[in-house]
Amino acid sequence: MTEIPMEWKSGGCHCGAVRFEVLAPDEVETKECNCSICRMTGFLHLIVESERFRLVAGQDKITTYSFNTKTAKHHFCSVCGIKSFYVPRSRPDGFSVNLRCLDDGQVRVARIVLFDGRHWEAAFAAARGNV
Image (cartoon, rainbow, N blue to C red; front, top):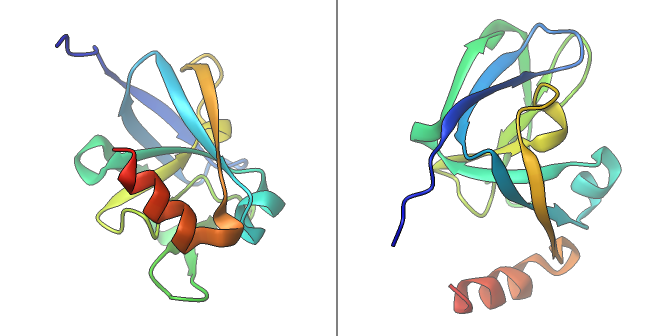
């Protein structure tokens, strides 16, 4: 099996107060979830292990929101309100980066996979069965 080359990609919020880097290949698969918060914010998920994410600026500008099971930690810039990354319920030891918050030209989207977040438990169990 061939290892896919990866490089650090940069991104951040709208105002630039929060900046991050994520280790990712040039071409990625992303997930689009239809749960209430993802649908309303237009979030496109690139889910990575914590070792592949680093916050480089703006720790003091981040505010966190949790709801329902309180497992996911939705991090927002307190200045502009953009959620460029968060700790997902599906991987509480990692991060989900919003591909739309990566700097222009950082990655190409090879495929968008739909995830039924409205029925999270059933969809997550089905996805785990396909791994």
